[in-house]
Image (cartoon, rainbow, N blue to C red; front, top):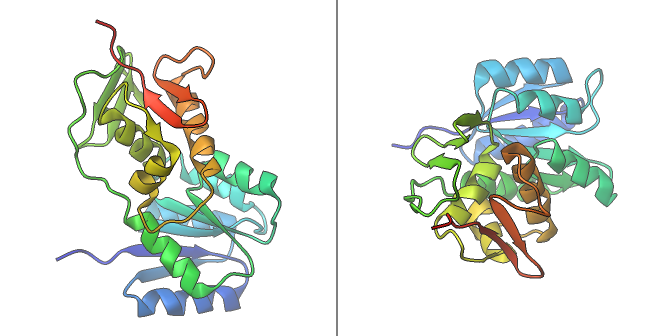
Length: 230
C-alpha cells in the first residue's frame, strides 16, 4: 500500500493556507502549514514533506532564500507561488531549485494538479548505459551521482533530467521528451523550463555549455549526454 504523500504549505496568508489545505486533504494528502521562512525550513527538515508549496513573498526570509536553504538538505519538490508575473522572477525561482511555479491568483484545483504532476515524475531505476562519458557515475537505484569520484548533490528534478538522457548517451532527447520524462506527461509548461534546469544541472556537474564534457546542446532540438570516447 502506497504511503500518504506529505505536502507543506508555506504562506503568510492564513486564508490561502486553509483553502489549499482543504483541497489537498480532500485528495488524500497529509498537509502541514508554515507562515514564515524560518518555520518552513524547520518544518521541511523535521517533517520531510514530499512537496513544499512555497510562497515567494514571506516575512523575514523570503521564498527564494527558503528554497536555497531547503535545497541544502532536502530533495522535496518545490512548487513556488508568486504574485509576480514577470519572467525574470520565475527564472530566479527556478534557478535556486524550485521545480515549478504558479502565479497568484490561482485555481486550487490547478495547484492540486501541479502537485500530482510533480509526484508522477518517474524515479524508476532504468539501467544507465555503460556508455556514460568518462568521469560521470550514475546510481539510478540510490539516485546518486559522482563526477571524478566526487559526490554531486542534485535536486530531484535535475537527477530526473540526467537519468532521462542517460538512457541512451549520444542520442538527442527533445525538450518535449524531457518535459514528459521529468515532469510527467500531464504537465503543461513552456519548454524554456527545461533550459533553466539543464543550466542548473550543468553548473552542479561543473560542465561548460560551450565546451561540454557531459551535456551537449543540440540547437533548436534538445540535449544529449555525451558518449564515452572509445
